[in-house]
Length: 276
Length: 276
Image (cartoon, rainbow over all chains, first blue to last red; front, side):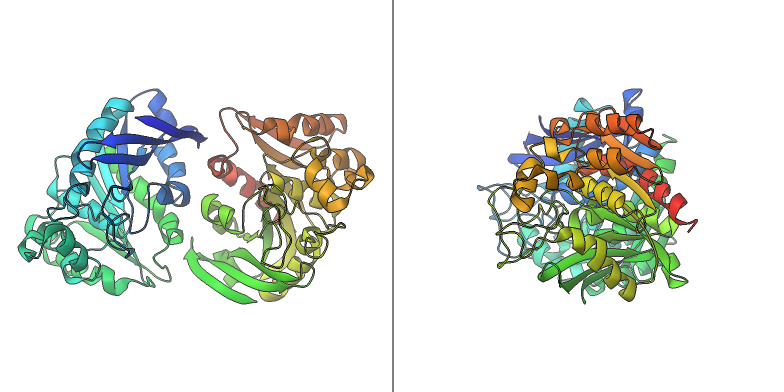
C-alpha cells in the first residue's frame, strides 16, 4: 500500500493510497479520510461510492464530507469506480468499462478478467483497510448515482457487513434503464435473471433492509428518466420499509447537490454507527 | 453576460457566467454564488481570488464556502486568475501568463494588451455584477496564495471599496520572492519602485488597513519560502495592525487547508459586512 498524498484536513488526515488489487488484478487508487478522533481510538467507516466517469477523487474534493466526518468521528472511504490501466478492457462510451464498473463481478469477456468491483468493495478493500487504518470494523455505506446503486445493492445483499445506508440520486432500477441494461448485459451476459441481484428496487422488494434508508433525489435532476426514483419509491412504500425519500426541489445531479445534503447524510450514518 | 451553468446549492444558486471584459479585452468566465437570502433582499458579496494555475472553478468546487455563505447570507464571487484565449499572450511556465495574472495592470509587452486584472477585479467586475445580481454594494475580499496577495493588496489600496479582509496562505512579500519578482518584472518592468504597490507587507507598512485582518497559514505549507509569512507577521506587529495571523500546524497549501478554515473566514466577513 503506497501513499500517494497526505493532507491535513479538518483536523484529520486525507490520504490517497495505491495498492495492488488481487480481485481486480491491477493497481487501484482510493482516498481515505481519517478524522481526528482516530488518533485516540478506532472509528467507524462511511463508504462513499461514486458515479459514472468519477475516480476516487471527485467526492473526496467536491462533496465537502470531511467537515462533517471530522465532527462526528467517522472515517470516509472513497474507492475508484472501476479497475484501470492499459491492460484493462475499456470502451469508448463514458458509461461502460473504465469509470463505469457498476459494482458487479463481471462474468463475461472481455470484462471478467479485471471487473470484479463487487468483491473489491465488499471483501478485499475492507480487509485491507482494517489492517492499515484505525477502523473499528463498523461500516456504513452511501454513494451517488451509479454509486448510490452500488451502495444500496451492496448493503441489501450484505446486511451483516453494513449497519447504515443512504444514497444521493441513486440508479435504483437498472434492469429497466439505459443506465443498467447495457452494462449488466455486457458484464453479466444476456440472462436477465442474473441482473436482478443488482437492481436496488427489485432487491428491496425481495429482501428488504434491516434498518432505515435515507435517499435524497434532486427534483430537477437531468437524469430522472435513467435513475427511475419512482421504482424505488413504490418499492419502499409497498414493503413498508422504514425510510426517508426526499425529493429536493430545484436540485440537479451535480456535486453541488451532494454537497448541499452531505451534512444530513453523515449525521444519519454517525447516529447509526456510533451505537455499535 | 451569458449563463454557462446554474446549479442549486445549499438553498441558493451557483451560477457560472461568461462576459466580454472591456479592460482585459477578451471573454472572461467567473462563478457567482447567490445565497437564499438574495431572493428577499440584496446581499453583501465576498470575493475569493484564486491562486496560480487556478480558474474560476477551483474554489467554487473545492473550498466548500457555499455552505457557510448560505447560512450567513453572503454572495460569493469567484473570478478567473487571468485573461485567457488564443489571442492572449502566454508563457510555458505555470507561474506566468494565463492562470497567473497576479492581480496587476500590466504595462509591458506582450502582456499589457490583456493583463489588466487589477482594474478587472476592482472596477469592471463589481460594476457589472451589481447591475446583474442582487448585491447591496458592500464587499469583502479574501483569496488563496496568489489570490491572497490579490486580496490584501487590492483591499489596502481601496479601503473605501472593501469592508472586510482575510487571506489563506497569501503571497505577502512578492518583491522578495520568486513568486513575485519574475511576474512583477514581466508585467510591470524592471523598475522595482513600481512593484511596491503590489507587495502586501510593504503596503501594510505604508498605509495600514482601516479594519482588522484574518490570515490563516499552514505551518506545513510546502511553499513557505515563497509565501514569506514572516514578512507579513513582522509588518503586522510593527504597525500594531489589528489582526489575527494563525499558523495552523500540519496544514499544507492545498484546498483541503482552505476548506478546513473556510467556515471561520466566511463568518469573519459576515460579521463585518452585515453591519453595513
